[in-house]
Image 1 (cartoon, rainbow, N blue to C red):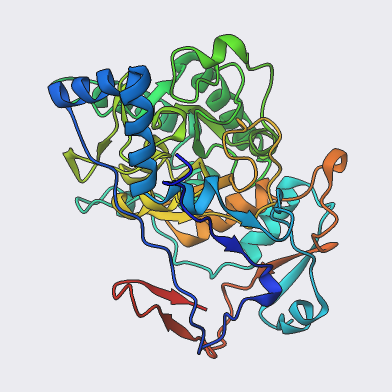
Image 2: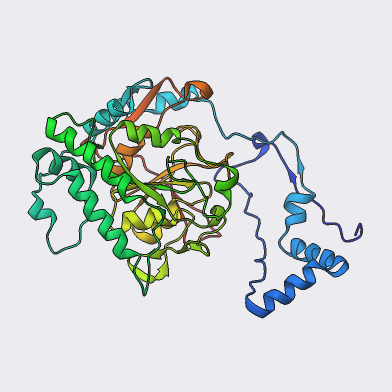
Amino acid sequence: MGLLRDAGVVYKPVEQIDLGPCSNESYFKADKAPRMAGFLLKIFAWFLESRIIGALLLYIVKKNNQVHKLVSNATLEEPPMFVPLHPITDCIKTDLNQQEVKQIDSDASPPERVQQAIKCIPVTSEKSLDDLKSSCFRRWTIADYSRAYSTGEITPLRVAEHFINAVRESCSPPLPMSFFINSDAEDILRQATESTLRYERGNPISALDGVLIAIKDEIDCYPYPTTGGTKWLHKFRPCTGDACCVMRLRSCGAILVGKTNMHELGAGVSGINPHYGPIRNPYNPKKICGGSSSGSAAVVSSGLCPVALGVDSGGSVRMPASLCGVFGFKPTFGCIPHSGVLPLNWTVGTVGILAATLEDAFIVYAAISGDLPSHKPTTLPPKVQFPLLNSTKPISNIRFAKYGEVSDVIMIN
């Protein structure tokens, strides 16, 4: 094997790499692994499991995909950064235009953060229940629910009942949508009843009070087990409480409606789960909805929930959001605590948000963001910067960058 050994790549320290406009750096291109199914896949697996032929075959497949060159035989001239946290430099601080952001105390409670976020959002024209029930499909926003609850046009309990019936209907053949792995009608009605009573007394906790929010089955949400899309993981890692982000949503009065289906262990982008069924795209039930936060994107796209939580490492929130026509937001690493989230990709993964509108994603981000005192990153600023979405200042100084070798990719800087 020594004669066949590939020379490994030498990864230089980032300070020595030219990333300017005249840079000669380029992406490595790897051949795709062969795609096989059925009888051909069985034959391949049989050869792969044999001692001599299997070792040679595995070596060839890795070589063709440059695994030896880029990973096995690579040389790192600097220690790897296991946690992608970067210090907030002075230049970044000065770049923030104080007229475009609002500084929020990092110690503010989740309901207080939600209230501050509401003040940063443009005031929308009030719509009655009849307007929202028009024949044209329209996803309800957090503001729609909050307004309808406050005026008494509808109650959280009534919304919960409609939700339970809609989920039951979506599970019916011939094309079950498979949105959820676990959803407890009794628990949903209990939460909705408590929220309804708060509105009747005139003391809702926040704008999220009574709003339905679904949770990806990669995030702890008691009393549901956290399966990660498997049939076995919850037996070895029992769920004993809420993840930090879920706990913060509860403290705002949100109704947590269950655990959404996902690509098994987040290891794929199709959302086809062999145990709980393929998550179907609400726009076309014969199409996939992407992954791995498949069910979370689908429930928002279908209008069942205005917001759902997912987890994103390499696009697990953003890809299904794109395929389902909703907003997908992956926050900066460290802004949302990892406590209570399966550590599948803990060095790059973070809790993400899927929402029908940008404003709804912002409101939920305000509720769940912020450090935990027990593992507080030292690189985050003492003040949280909320964008002023209601600013009338025109957008300026936006630069578009296009990578020459990938013609269909545009990045906004």
